[in-house]
Length: 160
Length: 289
Ligand SMILES: Cc1cc2nc3c(=O)[nH]c(=O)nc-3n(C[C@H](O)[C@H](O)[C@H](O)COP(=O)(O)OP(=O)(O)OC[C@H]3O[C@@H](n4cnc5c(N)ncnc54)[C@H](O)[C@@H]3O)c2cc1C
Ligand code: FES
Ligand code: FES
View 1 (cartoon, each protein chain N blue to C red):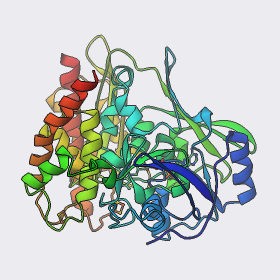
View 2: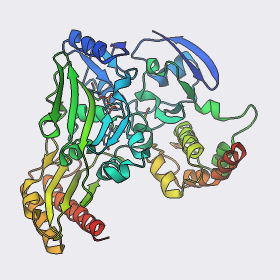
View 3: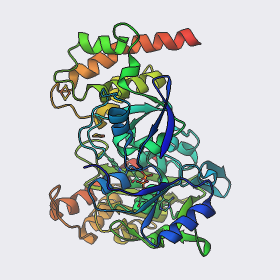
View 4: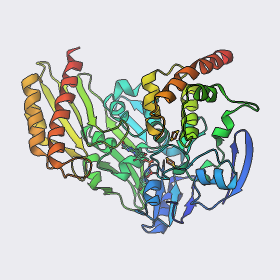
């Protein structure tokens, strides 16, 4: 089936069978391998991408369901050069070790802070409870998210 | 695992969707948020030949609030329920329970209709529908019908829906002003399926006594169940510490849960009583205010 949607600001069109998940479509058809696939049944959160502003599990969404949608993957979070403030905060706080969970953590936290730039630590912990990390113990991830809030509060302020 | 092969259609109207399900003769399944059916297909617990995506059907959306109560379209997501400030006032038990459903990303896609049709005995929505006497509006090849929540759930992951029937909306009767309520569950990690949970509500009469008591439990049997002995222990009583203790003992005594790798039967039995005790304590504190 032919599917057309926007990924990281670029319009794409792919031909996929209905069984292709959005995750596999991004990785195999569009070669955006930043999106990781861990469990393929919705429990680990590694595959999280942003669809029309909402963080969703791309292993639990069919590529054909993305027809007409605006998708942002981890690749779309960075500016042309260097890292986004959230990515920089991850680096500063050592919020990753092996990096497998990182794309899902970044997309989830980006979606959260874009909508709720004042999210407190409890809210951040609650939101990333759907993302498993086997390395960091989460504390550094929460610290990075807390630290990155300032840049989201600022960009909100700029728009207003 | 990767998903098995299937065909996909996204019709623009309910009648087309019903026709596709009818033609599928039990091999076609509706697709809402996909947060339950896709994992089940990945596990090969279901291998439908056709998924009928309901996402383009406008009649399944929207939350309508009126004097008669609340009507929520089947495709309304957990996230929409939690974002709706009015529901916290006109149907507060619902958002309180839905906060326990799954994780952030799953709540962005999972729907109320999908959850009711999926009928997982560990899920929150079926137990809430039961406690609130919700009515499920469905449409199928034979037309429309209303199903009382108590008649929908027939077993674990099974309902009285026929294969061509689609849930259109869920109706909740109006919420009386003097109603006490609380939802409690216990899960090892927030957002995971609960080891047990209870939804409780009752109206408070002029003498401060509990009337129209409803208590339901999840993750305790094959379907959500009403805890009738606990309800009887509460009906007509002022919900003081003694009454709460009696209700919680009645709840533990009346249930006969199965044990599994997550919790033994004895533990679940004790847990139901503890959770009801906590729920009723919070409910009573709410009316005292
Ligand atoms: C990691 C994880 C954790 C979860 N934790 C919880 C939890 O704690 N509590 C909880 O309640 N749920 C939990 N869920 C399930 C989630 O809430 C689902 O969203 C919900 O159970 C089903 O809704 P859906 O819209 O995704 O349905 P789908 O997956 O699209 O469909 C589910 C079933 O219902 C049928 N169906 C769908 N819509 C209709 C309709 N309108 N009419 C008739 N049949 C229909 C489908 O054919 C299918 O059989 C979890 C899921 C995941 C992946
Ligand atoms: S790969 Fe999607 S949640 Fe694990
Ligand atoms: S950094 Fe290794 S899983 Fe999170």
